[in-house]
Image (cartoon, rainbow, N blue to C red; front, side):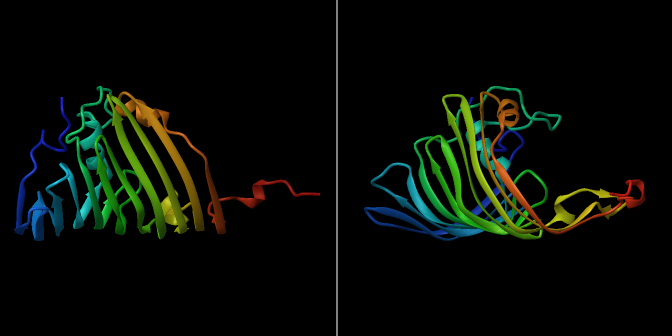
Length: 231
């Protein structure tokens, strides 16, 4: 089958735009609309001489990494919310070469909470989609990174790089009895790669190096009296 994000559950869409054409391009300006309840606006220029080529700018209320992934890999989750064991579908659209400057009030990466004030460059080329020069506010710090998702004839892959500066441990860690177990700040750098023929296999194969540094670290709930004195 062919992967079309959210088409199985239905995606109400309304859009309006001004259109101007020349022998070389089709320009869509003052684009405004909603996909379900997600508002968007921007502009798009389509190259009439190069099939599938387009560029522009897009501002959204929210953007979801899983939704982008579905356009390349097919359904990411099964009906129970677990990673799907089904084989990958064909990408929703092939033959594209689309480059967009993207901004989103919230970007959902699939772990922890949303990245706010998100900005980056979105490229959809053939059977791959990539977000580069990504930046935003996440876990109390500043995020920078990139992610690439591809589907090579049913073999999917993910490549990513994530850097967080000045993150808040209270937001990233866990809590006990309503109190953060650890407080302080952290810097994090992680590179991640994964591949597989199903979303579950891709998730299980994820691996890569990373480093973390902590500043002003305080741990709650440690009973120092339980430790023997050092002599």
